[in-house]
Image (cartoon, rainbow, N blue to C red; front, side, top):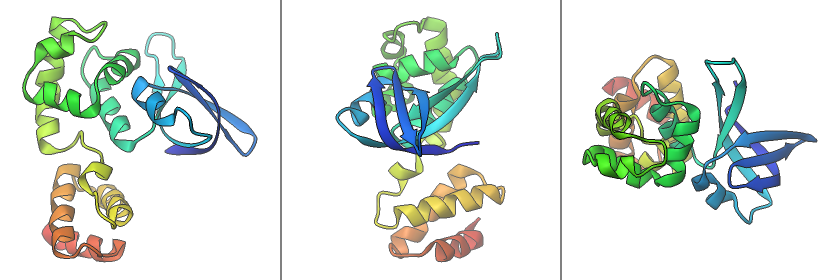
Amino acid sequence: MIDYISGKLVTLTPTMAVIDNHGIGYATEISLQTYDVLNGKTEAVVYLQRQVNPRDGSEADYGFATQEERELFRQITSVSGMGAASARMVLSSLSAEELRNAILSEDVNRLKAVKGIGLKTAQRLVLELKDKIVKGEAAGTEVLFKTDSGAAAEEASSALQMLGFSKPNINKAIQAILKQDPGASVEEIIKAALKRL
């Protein structure tokens, strides 16, 4: 599975980005949020999520300018009845912060304002995602770890997830560790987290 692609931004439209990486052009479907971030750039990093259409088996790569947006996309598509196209529409209509606020405040009308989202779908989004957002599962590590040691925190978080620990517990532990020692290395974060988890 490809996690991200970096390279020359060859084509950019409000719905698609093509990135040239060593002579191979990777086409990804994107949201307006990602389009706004990439617009005007010549080089780009895009985080990927491959989606398979259950109806016809076709595959498409969705690209995101941030890991946070990709995580939200994954959460939205985990809701019953929400496909990749609907998730992209939600992320094109609402920023990550607006989406979180709408779900946490159970603002069904805000969600219904998104094209293609009806009352029942909006209610399902609130019902199925509220707990995940409260626990921090829908927040990207880059938002949780806005420190100089962000890269170390992300690497430690990934390693701990591979060991089988849950993301919300990992995030809590790492935040506490970085409060005490903001300059902790990956190894130090992992060792300290293992004592807490």
